[in-house]
Length: 152
Image (tube, rainbow, N blue to C red; front, side):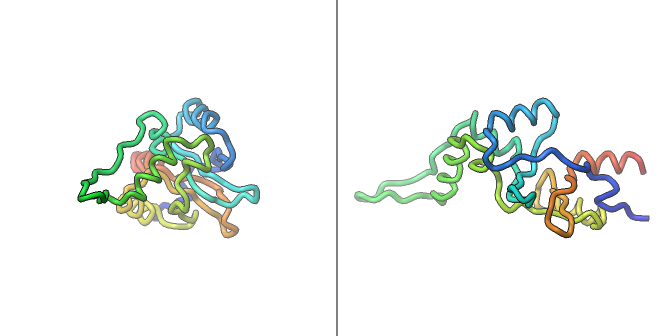
């Protein structure tokens, strides 16, 4: 019988609120030895996810996009909107300012192979698991999938 997401996900994950200070989120990640937190609003609905990758901008800073000067004009060789997003993450002070909005999600009844394929194709490390009301009831990580494979 094929395993489902609910068979291997971490139930009742720790969540963050958008207004949570980044220092608090960083402390939770470090103390709990986890790499990401679903971000929920006051109604418990998922609004984003904050991960180690989002927080790395705080330490690493931002590299301006390459550009060339032609006459008195600046021509960007990359999309400057990406640079603005990176600056926002580097300077953010709350979870809401640095989180990734609209993350991919899954449902508890999805088969584990389908969820694993989605994570692999999109190169994501975690999938929040939502119930029928859109509330976070779990999180599926790559580690959960590997542990499930080890027990087969």
